[in-house]
Length: 152
Image (cartoon, rainbow, N blue to C red):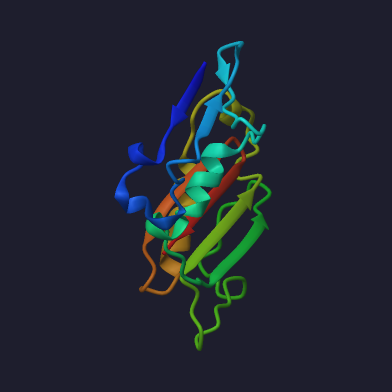
């Protein structure tokens, strides 16, 4: 399968990096096992990535952020009331996001069979209580005994 795209087919918004009328980009690929791998006539397999990267500033904005990332091996225990000895934040430069990983959340055998969220809920409640009020819970995910919490 081969597609030829001339400059006249590119939107004007693509700017000066668009190919000229004399230039043509040939995108071809072979289909094997249901996968399509586009390549240009010169063998460049990353034609789509290269085109997107060339116009990245139109679609993406980047801003530096501060992250606080920490983890703790819970060892199946319930959380203590206070986590202030562990969650020490720089009050001069508060992080934009807090990412907390917990390991060995629930070591009970039935946790691997039944979806028991009791320990997860205990830890979420204590984490939310111990984080400064400016942070809100964004997401969490659990895979058996591993638990990841993101607050922003």
